[in-house]
Image (tube, rainbow, N blue to C red; front, side, top):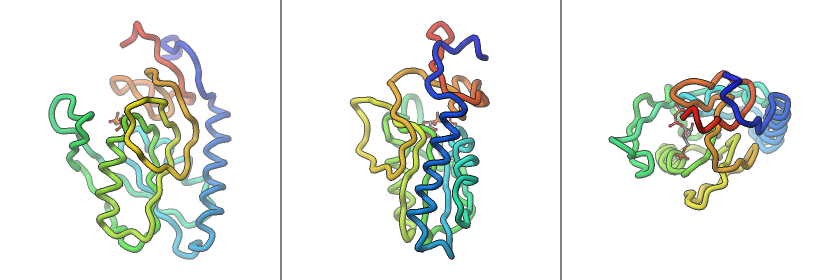
Length: 180
Ligand code: PRP
């Protein structure tokens, strides 16, 4: 796996430090609702790794829930039309929900998700994304917590895949172009 990486963008240590900082910020920002805690929601599959680490960096009661979604048809990802394959296991009405995403690229996944989740009446709804790609055509998404800005390159690791590989790399790197 490692030989396919052209350049490491964020090391394991840098990621751990940043996730810790985001966890501390969330702990601080939600101190007023410490009794009820927060619900972390992630979209399978890539974001599960970030969410698992983020949950342990938050010093509040945390519930973890997951959704799986799929795009309609070919190239539909850019159309923003998605289908729910697996819905949340619990109700989020009246809850403080934080969506944990691994990467914000076109923003269409989050745009759909936020609309869908907000219709369920959460007490609050915010986004924590580990990575935000610098792309021109990105939906206008308000992210309360952003780990790193990253270049518009093919990146893998720490949950991000190419053809389901590289998710388990402990760092985030740029995939060599001859690989894809
Ligand atoms: C990735 C990532 C985000 C989405 C971001 O998921 O986890 O959910 O793409 O892209 P967008 O901002 O352009 O919508 P992907 O569909 O690759 O599924 P995966 O998590 O199973 O890898």
